[in-house]
Length: 115
Length: 115
Image (cartoon, rainbow over all chains, first blue to last red; front, side, top):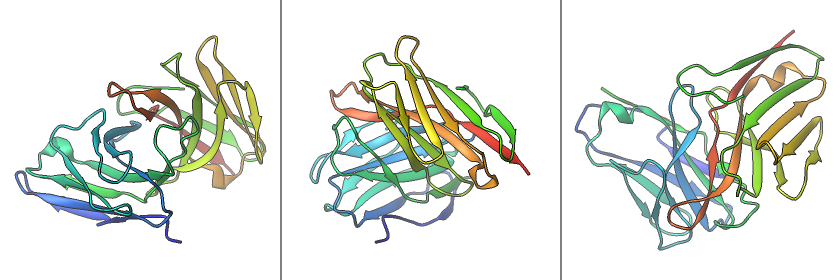
């Protein structure tokens, strides 16, 4: 099992360009998440999908959109990239959102630079 | 402990010593807590968790202590090894504005193990 797989691992964009970060999990998890991590800071939740067909905003959703394509895949889209979106992006999944003992499994991250 | 901004607090220990990493959480209603380890260039990995109805839980070489009175969580690592060098995050399971629950993360502590 690969767990949570993110692509690409690195990306450089110019301001105003768009791109989609891909995430797939093979653990049959219901819930998936996108976090961003800025230098010296903890992870902040951008969007999450409690189950296939649902998505909800997290702490920092502005400038992003998401699509839960199917149970396995959850993509994050930047429509018009800004330098403030330079960060490391992590996708995560868990068996079922909302449970008390929610244990997240993370991908290895996408390092995004917006010039 | 926790910090805001670009500079992570750093704990430097000698190989073989015990390490204690502290975390202050924010939400008195949080009922589940996790410690994650993040090595350079990788996604966070689960270490140990604890429910709010417990005050101590032990794993292999790690112990988590929870003090709900002062909203404090600590991670103890016994006989610290060079492979323990990483950034450690605590996370609490909180209810969001949407009513759903999600994990929110502290800003992390860097552990440096000196040989």
